[in-house]
Length: 311
Ligand code: MEV
Figure (cartoon, rainbow, N blue to C red):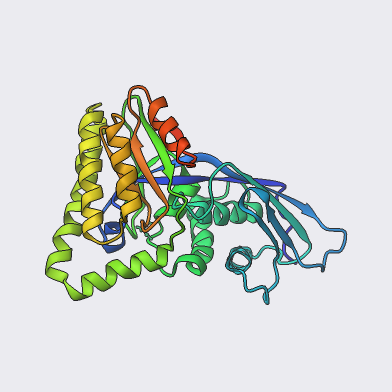
């Protein structure tokens, strides 16, 4: 018989600072966890054979976890619970999240990591939790690099290379960002497929762009460790142009980057898969005019101070 679920579990969301897309091709990426982005609670139903349910009001989710429920979140949740040998019936799962869903901020990885921890416990070995999360992530994203699951499980700032253990990156102070959800939906699988198709058609052109995106990570870490935020911002701008060259930006995302720079941000770029989703900007000394302009456009930007955990 499957063990009972733990009463609570949590996981981080993420922002990819540098190296999205190129990470799929074996280059490094740099990402930061957004702490406790989802908290799940599990309560046993009176009827242990009744289908489990998953409700996250902040994400407009209210699902029965049954195999014939075509909703990808229901399928992914059952994959994760099954992967961990957890109970597939008899539980009500409720979540709270301050993270926008489906915006490129790792909400699906956060959900799948928290689900794995409901079965395995908050202190379960990270590698086991990540493997279980990936079983769910494949339902959403095809063959993800794994960066989202690693950051959701570990938090902090990570340098990630596909197939290797991630390294925690430390730097003095904080990296002040403004996260700007564009409100435009995107599909990670579609954007990854678009880059793959370009790479297939034009490998000699695409390879150097991916290589250069990989180099932004080494240079970005170097600038963070030298407390050179202006320099980091410049690298963010270059990364955005390289991602545009891969075809994963869009005029709304370009325009959000321009607005951020016009309001004093030293750097701005799309984050995550692109197409829609979010832009991140290095916060200007006074972020209020930027936040005001974006809110007047009906957007909901939020400031984040990325802190690297010192050992
Ligand atoms: C998505 O958050 C990041 C991508 O690089 C895809 C992946 O790493 O699987 C676009």
